[in-house]
Length: 430
Image (cartoon, rainbow, N blue to C red; front, side, top):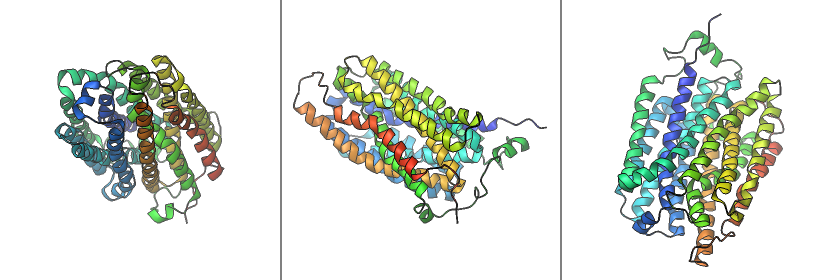
């Protein structure tokens, strides 16, 4: 019996690195927003910052739905490479921004490019991993987003004080081109890759549904209840995750009067635990499956436990300790990543491989659209509360309504998905 190769895990490592770069590039502005010197330079209000965030989110939403067909047309290798080039150039273009409109354009371009990351990564996982390994692989590569979010709070302050905020954007943007060289060197489809043995290729094909290679039209996907159940989860949990990414530095600044240097370590703690949650959460349903649980029970139990882990963030606006708040955000972040890794695998459990990027992309688009509305509400809510108390004070009601939504969204999403998909199984494609 031939030994099964391990090259698929090299591909997973490339996906992990792409997620690290992706999140570092998008995190820079949010981190700088908590720095008083940067705020004085740009002269924005909280509502202005909300509009800038919406520029990113709107293009990200549009890009999510566009990248599914692009991947089908160009293939995973070319699409991922083009996305990386585009978003890396967009990240560096922030250094050229001189006006509010320039910042908005740079963020819009960054969102458009970065929107290709997850549809391409999920498609890569479906090509390179059998169903029983997908949740683990997804959890591993998805943890890269948290490593990026962990490194950025530690690296950006150093770059800010050494090369300035413009230099920070340029330095981190260049990292994408290093990744690109490795991607073009190593990646080929499994059937064409000289680094994949016959035994490993056979392993990749184990457990695939009969319809795995069939094409599904975009219009057909809208007719599936299973797809809409997944979309229902996206519009609830997506805005929460995006809010954490854009506003946590501002939360620590407003709640505890911390600046860029002060909130770096708490945010790094959040990102570190969140990364561990991505791996552990992604592997949780796989562990249940190895114990003989049916896939429906394994996936839903894992997501339910993750949903429970997000509830304590409701308490964060009422805390006096930044480290306790960071611990609760870390738990919620870990739970979110476990949820996401499992739900991405659920999409691959239900739909044929050719449909996965479109399902994930459309769900991401809906989440992005709803996130723009949530950003508008959140920025105005924060601006209104702070305008009523212009001097710093631990105003524990500023984020109360926002965190109530963040804490409850996942349980509601779980109920919606369970109602729409009572049993997880391959969709019957006609």
